Image (cartoon, rainbow, N blue to C red):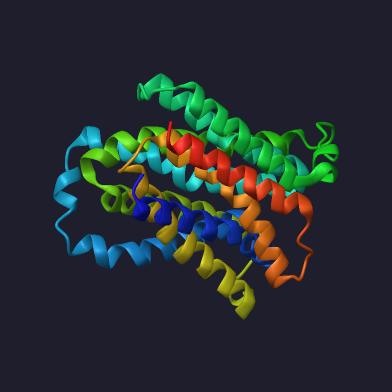
Length: 293
């Protein structure tokens, strides 16, 4: 894997690691589906000037391609973020953390089944080491707090969102190889914004929420989610996906928990524990081993 591809993946994962804090801030003020709608609209506003001047629309003018992009917009935009955001409100953080850790495994299985990507002992060992690192970073308290009783709806929504992202990664790779990362991510985001905006509007009507109620902090969080996460991070992720195997891209998602913990240590002055150090080393080793498989 080229150094630029690694940097793109690490950049995307870092932006997503910080997104958990931004989402929590936004949800203190804004209803969940409205958050999703706003972040997709903001990301679309970032994509439009780029996509409108490149003559890229002509490349997706046939019906089959449009249907594929519509399907990807369901898995990778509205439904993924909608299920995840609503699910996080109805389950505990420990359960959500455990489910998120299954993402790269799902990507690996789908890549082998549908993209005929090779699976060998080195990749399996690398993913196993990375999983061990994530579990160490989570810590014993998080793992022992996992429970199935009382959180079933939220658990199912979060787990479904992880499966959707795996489908988005694997099935998005094939069309990305044809159309390019920018065209795919921009079109998927724009389509997602078109069909999620009415849903967000209906939620605002049902809850009585008004955009005038957004505080400057909430606006900053929503803008970060749209511009940094849905625009820049997704574009970096798919740019890397265009250049290497999807399972090698997926394993980088295991770098998000250590990055989140480090960010919390820097921003919130939370202690850097031995588990964080050991877990981070294991994640790096697992990613490196998988990447060379």
